Amino acid sequence: MKYVSCFTLFLTALFLVACSHAKANDQPLKDEMDLSLALKKAAPSSSLTMEPVQKETSNPSKTGGNYLASLPGLSPSEVVSLIEGYGFDCTLPELNNKRTTQYCDLTTDEYQFTVSIWGKTAESVDLIEAVAFYYGELEDYSDLTAVIFGNIGGLSYQNSVTQKAKTWVQETIPSVQNSGDEAINIFGGVHYYIYAMPSIQVLEIGKLQK
Image (cartoon, rainbow, N blue to C red; front, side, top):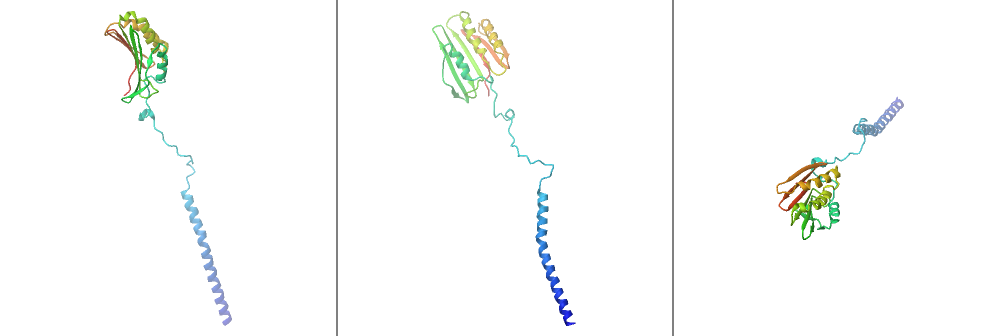
């Protein structure tokens, strides 16, 4: 009986050690299962796409970050290049009251032409103002004015109808001679305005931007 009892105690002790060892080995397995479950819960659903996030960009038309010039696509240098061919002298662009301005002048003993170019940037044009001043009668110089003003009116910009605009200016100049005379038209969405004062004719193309 003593040997049986000892043998029984030995088996019992062995069983307890084995159980203890098995429980210890179960803990890492449980930890691995918990980690796997956590990763599965954290993983994105199969319905989601792993696309890079696109940063939203602002719409210039809504924010006003970019403005559209009154004569889009036309640069001051193109205006200057045209009128310098008639002998105009032009200043360098100047920034004044948040606008870039450039002035051109042609003066003789009989007449004076000036052209002013306005834009919000050095590369844009919002308004062209051409002025013809004569020391004689306007009708004596209407042909010259029609040529210079007509070619300015025929400058190319986005959506322009150059030939129609040029022809209208040339044909309108002779009829706008007296103080108070005026003529208005729109070409390619751009405002054209011709008017007269004593000894002066004026052509305006476009409009100043705020």
